[in-house]
Image (cartoon, rainbow over all chains, first blue to last red; front, side, top):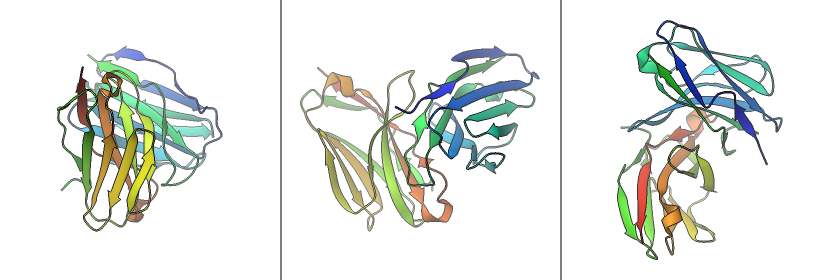
Length: 113
Length: 112
């Protein structure tokens, strides 16, 4: 089974802090994604990566950056956390482009106070 | 118009009945569609995917795709209380084939 592991299940941070969310997958997948999920808005894509050191902006990249130094690891960085970034963050991976289904991690519920 | 739209519900169905979940999409060169189930507090899990027009069956689940009318549906036969969850429809479109676009999800409740 594909395993996508997010480092923290719950995280509480203060406004202005730099926040790192880590994600590791164990199936040698090419693609990795970061989504946030908010009530009534569904899943929204923040960033994705289709290769090591490659990244593409999703629909809501503002206030976020990413890093993919190794194929199995994809990090989401909140440069200066704000209260409107309080959300559930979901990491996902897939073996190929587009038509491949996503495999999700368990999610990180981030609260910014 | 959002690219993928779902009625957010809640949709309430009696146990044993057929639950019908619908999804419409804007025409951007649709390629394929996925249905995910998400229990409260959990991450989404894949139920089915469909690429071609018509029906695709897997156990109690049937996915239907109609590209001419731009809708996708998921039927759940013999609904069980354990089917109570939020169902997410997602599509891949030719213009941006690297990413899935999700609808906002439909909350389904199966009443015993």
